[in-house]
Image 1 (cartoon, helix red, strand yellow):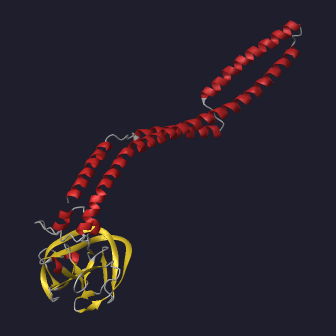
Image 2 (spheres, one colour; image 1 turned 60 degrees about the vertical axis):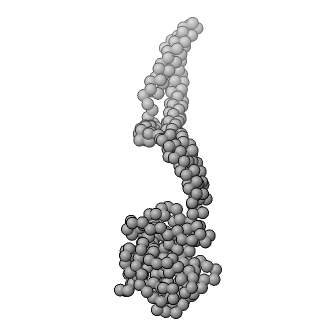
Image 3 (cartoon, helix red, strand yellow; image 1 turned 120 degrees about the vertical axis):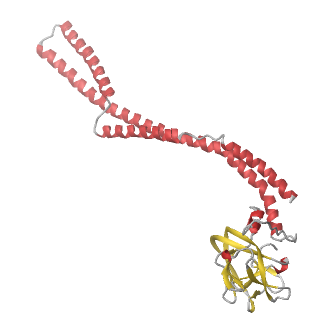
Length: 339
């Protein structure tokens, strides 16, 4: 217990650091970012729709108009002045020169329009890319800020695991350390609440529909209360009545199915133990002995199958010595909670 306490105290200290680090994480204003992103992408979508119709923003048209006017003024002026200097300025020659200038201007205008379409498409693509990069950058920053917290939690868990595993092993009786049964004045779930989260990996219990044999008949284990009477066995394996001193309240565990030779099935947790008439034996024993059955001969444990499902489970603790902490689960003698 000193070792467990030391490990868990160290783990608790690191856990507190992890909790404190949560407040230092970067949490973007995703609502504002999403609003900005949607506005940008709306503008981009409208821009592409205009491009498909051949429309450009007004600033492109204004720029083309100014550039064309400036170019025409300079070109026409130079052409007319040149013709005058050569003494050949007449209506036919001038008209021809102006027609050539107009044709060149039209060609240049078409080229500028195509270039403007390409330029605007590039601007729209850049705006969309920038909007995505803003979101991605904030996501990366948030993920990076969470890394220290995650590392601290993992470190805390690593510190707690050895102490927790040792406690579980001791609690399940695998090291011969004796009983760890504890009772309190709390009703129905005293043992469970006393144990807390430690030792839960090896808590051995049954699903709520398991039938417990009582003097009045069968009763689902989930309906058994402290003070109820159930049938048990004395030191001579005679059937006797005993009172329930504690009930392990409902908690969710992985379930295995245990099949006995008389057709009985247990829906229980791994490593549940049963009574063979002289000792408690685990359902996962390599060569399990036969099980003691209420009003019947001993039966074989045929197989144990993992189910992959979870369910709420329950267990009982009976009054009297720990080696007689036996009740009948679906008429097969089971070890109660506490030994």
